[in-house]
Amino acid sequence: MKFDTKVVRASTKPDKATGAVVPPIYQTATYVLEEVGVDKGFDYTRAANPSRQLLEEHLAEIEGAKYGVCFSSGMAAVDSVLKILKSGDHVICSDDVYGGVSRHFNNVLIHYGIEFTYVNTSNPHEVEEALKSNTKLLWVETPTNPLLKITDLDAMNKIAKSNNLLFGVDATFATPVFLRPLEYGADLVMHSTTKYLSGHNQIIGGSIHTNDKEIFDKMKFIQKTIGAVPSPFDCFLTMLGLRTLHLRMERHNKNAISVANFLQEHPKVSRVAYPGLKSDPGYEIAKEQMSGYSGMISFELKGGIPSGKHLMNNVKLCLLAESLGAVETMITHPATMTHAEVPVKERHARGLTDGLVRLSVGIEDETDIIEDLRQALKEA
Image (cartoon, rainbow, N blue to C red; front, side):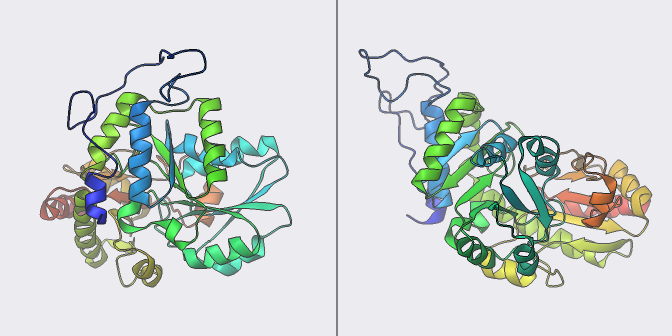
């Protein structure tokens, strides 16, 4: 089965009871047992639910994974992976990681005795330099949020395997349409299903995918024990969004390339970060391991933070919003929005300046998106 067909169909089959093409929503918490110790595979929705199971199987097929486990948010998925570790363990993490991840690591998990070192994973030497005797996990985000840094996953896999590290990849920005990290040796892949996978600004969710049965069993145990699971209705909505994922991503990618080229040539823009530009530092690696560059762009105006804010306050089509990966074009100021809780000194050290603007390019007509930015930049 070709990839595009998997996106639409995967393991989804008409409902056995009625023949319904769209599977029903199993909006229930409890299931009646046939007799003591005998059930139909479900007893309590925190442990398993038919709607969630369908989504997990569908996502796994798209990712090219044997197993999938869904959670109530991307952060719940990340936290569940970290629960595999124990006090005294050390984690090497991409420095330009989503602010919610570093916030969780730095303000919550450190109190449980887990250590973290942040490095530019685009540079394998920095990863090797950060290794310790107690390093257990290599956590990579590619492309990163919000600077769109690209990490060579083959290089990371070699480091992880030679040092017996668990190798996890957050591929939310790329989606399985453009990148499938398991093919490059990753032990597990995380997605915020809130973003491109559902694609319509309707739900919050997350998922973990792996080919390793031991990791899967641990994730299922944590999922059941903690109970951070998506509702049956959220799973249903995610399934609806998934069926057009390949088509949406093609349009996101096409539009983003046009917008990035426009921004790169604009006299008020000092720099553009987009792995689809030949001038981007990550272009060659992205071209090699990805089949597209997705719809995320970051750029900085020459006027710094005042110009950035002025731009975002003058757009008309682009929506000033914190999220990304939906059909609508959204614009964000990371320093005061998505990464506001990252300390200023740390943000600046990572290259996340006060004037940086992040753009999630939607699937509207590309000329309308560009014209909106053009008129807003004129005002800036």
